[in-house]
Image (cartoon, rainbow, N blue to C red; front, side, top):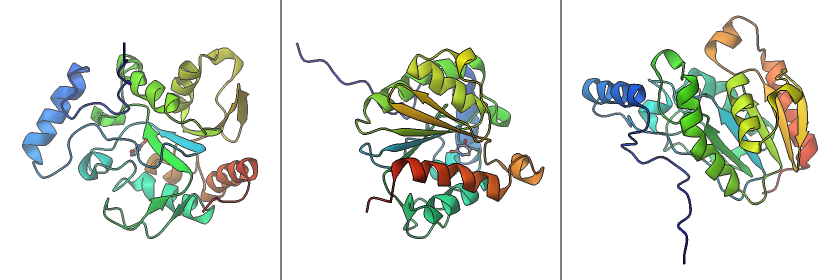
Length: 218
Ligand code: URA
Protein backbone atom coordinates (compact mmCIF):
# COMPACT_ATOMS: atom_id res chain seq x y z
CA UNK A 1 0.00 0.00 0.00
CA UNK A 2 1.34 3.47 -0.92
CA UNK A 3 2.30 5.55 2.12
CA UNK A 4 1.80 9.29 2.12
CA UNK A 5 4.94 11.28 2.88
CA UNK A 6 4.78 13.27 6.15
CA UNK A 7 4.15 16.99 5.74
CA UNK A 8 7.27 19.16 5.77
CA UNK A 9 5.34 22.27 6.79
CA UNK A 10 2.22 22.68 8.95
CA UNK A 11 -1.03 23.60 7.20
CA UNK A 12 -2.02 27.27 7.20
CA UNK A 13 -4.63 26.71 9.91
CA UNK A 14 -2.64 24.17 11.94
CA UNK A 15 -4.78 23.52 15.04
CA UNK A 16 -2.19 21.72 17.18
CA UNK A 17 -1.13 24.37 19.74
CA UNK A 18 -4.16 26.20 21.23
CA UNK A 19 -2.11 29.11 22.59
CA UNK A 20 -0.43 29.70 19.22
CA UNK A 21 -3.75 29.36 17.37
CA UNK A 22 -5.25 32.09 19.60
CA UNK A 23 -2.22 34.35 19.10
CA UNK A 24 -2.35 33.80 15.34
CA UNK A 25 -6.05 34.63 15.28
CA UNK A 26 -5.52 37.87 17.18
CA UNK A 27 -2.75 38.82 14.70
CA UNK A 28 -5.10 38.03 11.81
CA UNK A 29 -7.70 40.34 13.35
CA UNK A 30 -5.21 43.15 13.97
CA UNK A 31 -3.10 42.82 10.82
CA UNK A 32 -5.20 41.16 8.10
CA UNK A 33 -2.63 41.86 5.37
CA UNK A 34 0.14 39.86 7.07
CA UNK A 35 1.11 36.22 6.53
CA UNK A 36 -0.15 35.23 10.05
CA UNK A 37 0.34 31.46 9.57
CA UNK A 38 3.03 28.83 10.10
CA UNK A 39 6.18 29.96 8.27
CA UNK A 40 7.46 27.27 5.89
CA UNK A 41 11.14 26.38 5.52
CA UNK A 42 13.13 28.34 2.94
CA UNK A 43 15.75 26.95 0.56
CA UNK A 44 16.28 23.72 -1.35
CA UNK A 45 15.70 20.26 0.15
CA UNK A 46 18.89 19.19 -1.65
CA UNK A 47 20.99 21.49 0.58
CA UNK A 48 23.87 20.18 2.67
CA UNK A 49 23.34 22.87 5.32
CA UNK A 50 20.26 23.40 7.49
CA UNK A 51 19.93 26.41 9.79
CA UNK A 52 17.45 26.04 12.65
CA UNK A 53 16.08 29.16 14.32
CA UNK A 54 13.65 29.53 17.20
CA UNK A 55 10.32 30.80 15.88
CA UNK A 56 9.02 33.60 13.63
CA UNK A 57 8.93 37.11 15.07
CA UNK A 58 5.52 38.77 15.13
CA UNK A 59 6.43 41.70 12.88
CA UNK A 60 9.09 39.81 10.95
CA UNK A 61 8.69 36.31 9.54
CA UNK A 62 5.09 36.15 10.75
CA UNK A 63 4.40 39.26 8.67
CA UNK A 64 6.40 38.35 5.57
CA UNK A 65 6.06 34.54 5.54
CA UNK A 66 9.80 33.82 5.05
CA UNK A 67 12.12 32.81 7.93
CA UNK A 68 14.14 35.70 9.39
CA UNK A 69 12.71 38.12 6.86
CA UNK A 70 11.68 41.43 8.42
CA UNK A 71 13.13 40.26 11.75
CA UNK A 72 16.10 42.18 13.15
CA UNK A 73 17.89 38.81 13.44
CA UNK A 74 17.67 38.34 9.67
CA UNK A 75 19.90 41.30 8.89
CA UNK A 76 22.94 39.67 10.50
CA UNK A 77 21.99 36.16 9.39
CA UNK A 78 21.54 36.92 5.71
CA UNK A 79 24.55 39.26 5.59
CA UNK A 80 26.70 36.47 7.01
CA UNK A 81 25.25 33.85 4.66
CA UNK A 82 26.02 36.03 1.63
CA UNK A 83 29.56 36.64 2.88
CA UNK A 84 30.28 32.90 3.14
CA UNK A 85 28.63 31.93 -0.15
CA UNK A 86 25.54 30.33 1.41
CA UNK A 87 23.28 32.92 -0.24
CA UNK A 88 23.36 35.25 -3.21
CA UNK A 89 21.42 38.27 -4.42
CA UNK A 90 20.16 41.23 -2.44
CA UNK A 91 18.55 40.79 0.97
CA UNK A 92 15.94 43.50 1.35
CA UNK A 93 13.80 41.99 4.14
CA UNK A 94 11.01 41.16 1.69
CA UNK A 95 10.14 37.70 0.39
CA UNK A 96 10.27 39.09 -3.16
CA UNK A 97 13.82 40.48 -2.84
CA UNK A 98 16.36 38.69 -5.01
CA UNK A 99 17.91 36.65 -2.19
CA UNK A 100 18.53 32.99 -3.05
CA UNK A 101 19.99 30.42 -0.69
CA UNK A 102 22.84 28.25 -1.98
CA UNK A 103 23.16 24.69 -0.66
CA UNK A 104 21.31 25.97 2.44
CA UNK A 105 17.83 25.62 3.94
CA UNK A 106 16.43 27.62 6.87
CA UNK A 107 13.72 26.46 9.23
CA UNK A 108 12.47 27.16 12.75
CA UNK A 109 12.02 24.90 15.78
CA UNK A 110 8.49 26.30 16.07
CA UNK A 111 6.75 27.42 12.93
CA UNK A 112 4.13 29.77 14.42
CA UNK A 113 4.84 33.07 16.13
CA UNK A 114 4.73 32.62 19.93
CA UNK A 115 3.74 35.37 22.38
CA UNK A 116 6.86 37.24 23.56
CA UNK A 117 9.04 35.05 21.30
CA UNK A 118 8.81 32.24 23.87
CA UNK A 119 7.41 28.90 22.74
CA UNK A 120 6.51 26.47 25.53
CA UNK A 121 8.17 23.05 25.84
CA UNK A 122 4.90 21.43 24.67
CA UNK A 123 4.79 23.64 21.57
CA UNK A 124 8.41 22.84 20.75
CA UNK A 125 7.69 19.13 21.17
CA UNK A 126 4.57 19.28 19.00
CA UNK A 127 6.27 21.19 16.20
CA UNK A 128 9.21 18.77 16.15
CA UNK A 129 7.15 16.56 13.82
CA UNK A 130 7.92 19.08 11.10
CA UNK A 131 11.61 19.30 11.95
CA UNK A 132 11.81 15.51 11.84
CA UNK A 133 10.13 15.47 8.42
CA UNK A 134 12.27 18.35 7.14
CA UNK A 135 15.46 16.52 8.06
CA UNK A 136 14.25 13.21 6.68
CA UNK A 137 13.59 14.96 3.37
CA UNK A 138 17.16 16.32 3.06
CA UNK A 139 19.17 13.45 1.56
CA UNK A 140 22.44 15.42 1.32
CA UNK A 141 22.32 16.98 4.79
CA UNK A 142 25.80 17.23 6.37
CA UNK A 143 25.72 20.28 8.65
CA UNK A 144 23.20 21.98 10.90
CA UNK A 145 23.60 25.36 12.57
CA UNK A 146 21.47 25.60 15.71
CA UNK A 147 20.69 29.21 16.53
CA UNK A 148 20.32 29.11 20.30
CA UNK A 149 19.73 26.46 22.91
CA UNK A 150 16.13 25.67 21.95
CA UNK A 151 17.21 24.88 18.39
CA UNK A 152 20.17 22.85 19.71
CA UNK A 153 18.03 20.77 22.09
CA UNK A 154 15.27 20.13 19.58
CA UNK A 155 17.86 19.06 16.99
CA UNK A 156 19.37 16.57 19.44
CA UNK A 157 15.93 15.12 20.11
CA UNK A 158 15.28 14.90 16.38
CA UNK A 159 18.58 13.08 15.88
CA UNK A 160 17.89 10.81 18.88
CA UNK A 161 21.05 12.00 20.65
CA UNK A 162 21.24 12.37 24.46
CA UNK A 163 21.20 16.01 25.55
CA UNK A 164 23.71 15.36 28.34
CA UNK A 165 26.33 14.13 25.86
CA UNK A 166 26.21 17.24 23.67
CA UNK A 167 25.97 20.42 25.79
CA UNK A 168 25.12 23.66 24.00
CA UNK A 169 28.07 26.04 23.71
CA UNK A 170 28.53 28.86 21.24
CA UNK A 171 31.16 27.94 18.65
CA UNK A 172 31.19 24.24 19.40
CA UNK A 173 30.57 21.54 16.80
CA UNK A 174 29.23 18.08 17.64
CA UNK A 175 29.48 15.09 15.32
CA UNK A 176 26.25 13.09 15.62
CA UNK A 177 26.19 10.20 13.19
CA UNK A 178 26.68 11.73 9.73
CA UNK A 179 25.62 15.24 10.86
CA UNK A 180 27.87 17.94 12.24
CA UNK A 181 25.86 20.19 14.57
CA UNK A 182 27.29 23.72 14.97
CA UNK A 183 26.09 25.78 17.93
CA UNK A 184 25.64 29.53 17.84
CA UNK A 185 23.98 31.99 20.14
CA UNK A 186 20.80 33.20 18.46
CA UNK A 187 21.40 36.29 16.33
CA UNK A 188 18.55 38.13 18.09
CA UNK A 189 18.49 41.86 18.69
CA UNK A 190 18.80 41.18 22.44
CA UNK A 191 21.95 39.05 22.04
CA UNK A 192 23.66 41.45 19.64
CA UNK A 193 22.71 44.61 21.58
CA UNK A 194 23.99 43.15 24.85
CA UNK A 195 27.23 41.89 23.30
CA UNK A 196 26.42 38.23 24.02
CA UNK A 197 26.90 37.71 20.29
CA UNK A 198 29.19 39.90 18.17
CA UNK A 199 29.35 39.95 14.38
CA UNK A 200 32.81 38.34 14.64
CA UNK A 201 31.51 35.49 16.83
CA UNK A 202 28.68 34.81 14.39
CA UNK A 203 31.00 35.04 11.41
CA UNK A 204 33.33 32.48 12.97
CA UNK A 205 30.52 29.90 13.14
CA UNK A 206 29.77 30.17 9.43
CA UNK A 207 33.47 30.25 8.57
CA UNK A 208 33.75 26.89 10.38
CA UNK A 209 30.76 25.52 8.47
CA UNK A 210 32.33 26.66 5.23
CA UNK A 211 35.60 24.90 6.09
CA UNK A 212 33.67 21.72 6.80
CA UNK A 213 31.61 21.81 3.61
CA UNK A 214 34.37 23.10 1.33
CA UNK A 215 34.03 25.77 -1.37
CA UNK A 216 30.55 27.06 -2.30
CA UNK A 217 28.62 24.98 -4.80
CA UNK A 218 27.09 27.25 -7.40
N1 URA B 1 12.75 34.93 12.79
C1 URA B 1 12.72 33.63 12.49
O1 URA B 1 12.18 33.21 11.47
N2 URA B 1 13.29 32.78 13.36
C2 URA B 1 13.89 33.18 14.46
O2 URA B 1 14.42 32.35 15.18
C3 URA B 1 13.91 34.55 14.75
C4 URA B 1 13.34 35.41 13.89
